[in-house]
Length: 137
Image (cartoon, rainbow, N blue to C red; front, side, top):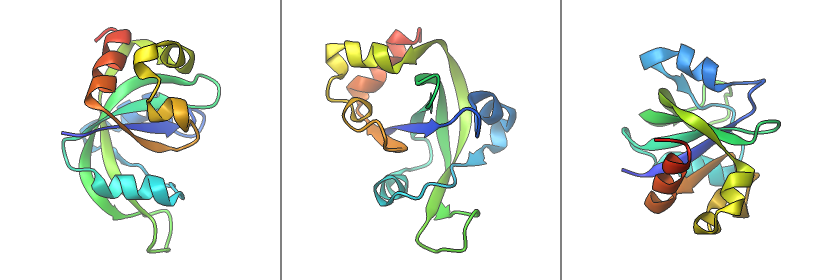
C-alpha cells in the first residue's frame, strides 16, 4: 500500500463533503498539474491518503482510500487530465496543522514541507505513521 496527501480548499470541497459521499466516494477531479496527475496514475485501489484542508485551515483532517484507479477526469474533455476516486475512511481526532508538521523534525523532508503548493503528493510510510500519531490515531 502506498500513501498520499490530497489537498482541497474547504470552501470548494471539504472533509464533510467527502464524508457525505459515503462508500460511493468522489472523483478527485480538477487537478491540472502534470506532476500531481502522474502521481494519481501511480495510485492503486486500497492506497490511503490524508485529506488536507488548504487555504485557511492548512491541516490534515481525515483519511481517504483510493477506490478507483486513474481514469479520465469528467470535468474536462481534454484527455491529458485524469483522476482517481476516493472515499472517506475516518476523521483525525485532532487536525494536524501545517505548523505542527513543519515544527516536527521527523517530517522535515515531507513533500508538504518542501513543496506545499502541489495538490497531490506522496507520503512515506514513516511520515504516515507520525502524522497519524500526531492526529490521535
